[in-house]
Image (cartoon, rainbow, N blue to C red; front, side, top):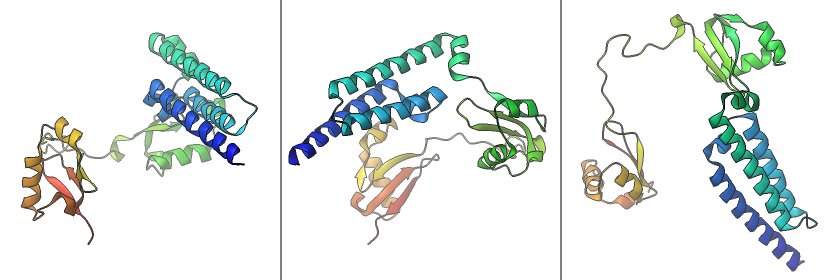
Length: 229
């Protein structure tokens, strides 16, 4: 019994380590499931990993070899996508216009076996609750819907009403998390500990340990969430 548990533990830790390494090799595209192939690859990786851990009839080396083969296939597909437009079209498909100039493209809907419930749901995910508000809607290869509203329903920008636009000084970034300074973020922003201390003192905070979370804002100020006492 104990030996079986130890074997499962060893298989689990080994599989986890290999999966972590392979996902790092594949890059962030795999994590985002950008295309159908990425989605299938993710499911296959999970299935192979589960079999390696549970099925003792599968040798660990055979399971890792299968993962390696799939990783190689994913890298090959990624390479072909970068180098060839035709390969991208075959492997990933292309966007499909489902609403054009405010009218539903019925032929495209039938070709994709798409119904109005599907379309309405995806529109609501884009905060659109009426088709009459839509100028164009495009179904992307990953199944998401990109929506361009009619001009009268689009959000007004500062440029539209000619308001002055201030360029942000910083991208909002974590500075303190759970009472500890995020040093790598400070370095990226060319800031230092002294600057943090001065910002905290301005708000009446005299110790970093009293801060649960702090974030630099786009205007250079510091948003501070103090610890609960």
